[in-house]
Every structure is written in structure tokens, then in C-alpha cells.
Length: 256
Image (tube, rainbow, N blue to C red; front, side, top):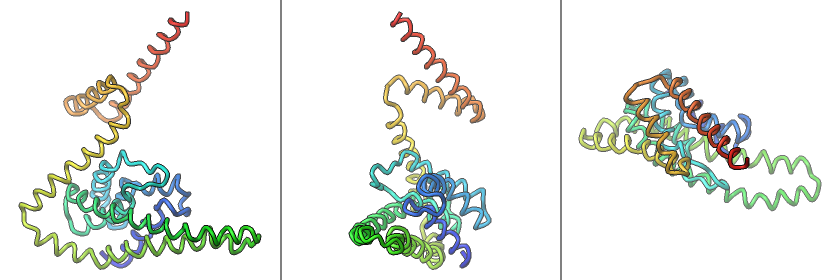
């Protein structure tokens, strides 16, 4: 990985963080650019391998598809996992399954960075309150936007750059010496992790046992009939409409 690639990927790792406002705030920066699927596309463009970048990003995204951050509680840093994980996977030439195994510890490390960032900001709040009480707009702006973003850049860009620029070659050397049996084990584990992510999502969505029938039907349609995803989506919309209208009609008859 060359210097420019490491700088660009590290910059997106910072811009797509939940605490940075430059790409449209949390609603766009984090919920769009911060997702591993989008990260895989961007990293693929930067590194000249869009196809594998998207494949790796999508595989990592499947693991975190049910991830939420209630009240700022971050179980894993999906941005670090997406950008740095995909970049390291592309630079070392490993499979998407192994890329997931690389992304998981990176995401966990990212949570410690987030906690440290939040802890430091908690001390800045008191000084910000003082400037607000004084009516000092210049210092207030710096304390609310300037200084926190300087800290965020240092905590986000710098570690990502160091890992990507100096660690990519070391990661390549490590991959070369890993025995085949260990690679096979990591591949199997990495292949299971996205299934775990889907299970977490299903647990959140399937609030009624009857809804499992729709999931089973969709699985059969995709795997056995091999229908295009757009066709499957239309079938799902039709079934949802039928279910909703039947419930509405049943409710209307009861009131009558």
C-alpha cells in the first residue's frame, strides 16, 4: 500500500466516524459512509480493486448488520472494521472470510478509542459551559467543534494511517507464514461470523413466531429457486400487503 492510499483510507476512516460532522453528520457520515459495505466500495476504488473491495465490505457488513448504538454505547467500531479491515485484506490478498476475522479485533479496538474520546470530551464540557456563560462565541465554537474534531482526527486518522502504511507489509509477512491448517480454521470461523450477525438481526425483527415462516419462505425462494433479489423483494412486498390488508379487514369486521 502506497502513501496516498493509506492517507485517503485513513481520512475516510475519520470522516465516516460517528463523532465527525463533515460528511453530513451522524445521519449520513456514520449511517452511510460508516457502513462496511460502503467502506469496501471506497477502499476498493482507492486501491484499484472495486470487486473484491465490495465483496469483503459486504461480508464484514453482514456481521454487523444487526449492530445498533443505543445511547452512544458502541459494541464494536464498524467503521474501523470496514475501512481498515478491508484495506488490510486487499493488501494481503486474503479471502473475505479471513477478512472478517481481521475486522473483528479491529472493531473491538475501535470501541476503546471511542470511550477514550468520550471521556476526554466530558472534561471539555465544563470549560465550554464557562465560555457559553461569558458569551465568548469564538472560544465556544472552538470548544464545541474545533478542539473535539482535532482530538477525533488524532484518535482516528493517526492510528489508521500507522496500521495501514506501516502494518500492511508486516501483515503480508504474517499471512505468508501462517500454516494452511490455521488458515482453514480462520476461514471457517470467519464464514460463521456473518451468520451470527444475521441471527442477531433476526432476533430483533422476528417478534412473533409466525414471522419465521416468511424468513423460511424467502430462504427457499433464494436458494432453491434461485430467483433474482428484485423478484424476491417484490414477492415480499406482495406478502406484506396481503398480510396487512387481511388484518385490516379482520379488524373492520370485528368493529362492525
